[in-house]
Length: 304
Length: 304
Image (cartoon, rainbow over all chains, first blue to last red; front, top):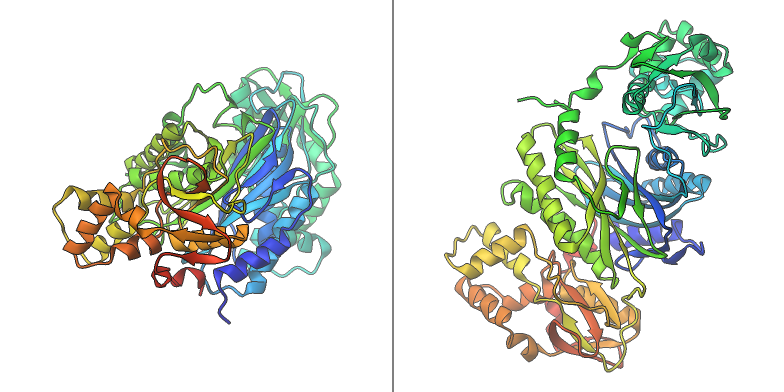
């Protein structure tokens, strides 16, 4: 079942083949040549086997989608369109060629949804699979996280917490036969980005991959304002009701998922009359109010 | 000796701090905002602990320089200027904070030489250190590898083989007390890119990180021409004489280093009256002539 690096590259070239007019030179030379703009947005995000994904819990396709969505989300969180992606992947040599192909197809699938094209990559050998992607986008008006204004409403593009719910089902090895549980598992495996929620007129945006509370705290601090959450606004959403029902079934804490869960690809924005789910208001002052701050995960800040 | 992720980010923000006017939003938001151009060049390259670098053999500073140079070289190999870099790094948690700082300083040092600025990154946790960088450059005239023309002369920006020579000294555990041996060890640890050799008027360029013979073969095939090497042109260079002397001392094969060694950051170009070292001529036909093709490494093509 051996295959050469050339076999892998040949498969990837086929999956990523494009006629996109923005791409002047695609995969195959030392670098790709693409059409840029005056205001470009660039971000990179790495996923490690056993830390950010798990071969037992996620398909190659979902792993590809997840890391791609993580990169795209950071571009959207600047109020920009994602245009180009490159991927560097380390493989162990124990993968089947179809696994690698499905990883690439997952990346391509999410990139297509975002309107982005994958223009290059690198393959390395390693004892574990590591995937690093870089996303390049463009915008005429970058929207930062330190520009939330008093009187702004606070919005999320969709309700966070699904990924944490899925992780809990997996780690506690609970099998729940419901569409809601399936959604949680699927969102854990590859959190979906809601591309229909357009925050281009927001005053400030941030991705909330670290958890809603942590990122809200960071935005409030950076902007010199206070975020006042309104739990009842969250409780009236259809997503909350679904998640709450699942939490009750397995005797878990829905607010811990929503406020403290990470790894969702949800955008947090402030502004006036934005789409998405309204969850509170920006007020003068410092910090967060209206929700239980004890739900914030603490482990995130300790690297060792 | 514990430190938090915030400590690491704080150190990196200090090392990578910049007032460069091309950078509109630097490290600290979801993504960086930079000034782009109409023709952008993008490439990514990954280095894995134990495969591309080794903590016993290379300092953090050299590892940072090496991966940065690898990315910059791919941009230069398109006839472009390297402008921006992002780095995604997985760490084990066993590193000292100063090791991480020196890794960043090595990246910054090579980026400075290239005139590029490091604008973003990601840190992940893993059982091994993996570094993925993406380089972004710009050019008004991309130079590809499939455009070598019959009658072109063939050039290298400097003589490849030093990295292979250094690797052989290390693996055979030979200690040679000479400036030439020191150069080989240093080039293995962090191959230098010669930024003074300007190939912007070349007809074709390629980076030769996989070995001179392999990359020359690829360029000749892609261009539909033949590369005729002239060994005596190589033998008259000062670098050849140094390398040849070292090879004789340790009973090794200098041509294996030059033709078959990889991991040098040397550019191979064809054109008329270019700078660098002239090593042959492009002729009609197919393949490579003038050197011993048996020196080409074979292991490169087998992923498993």
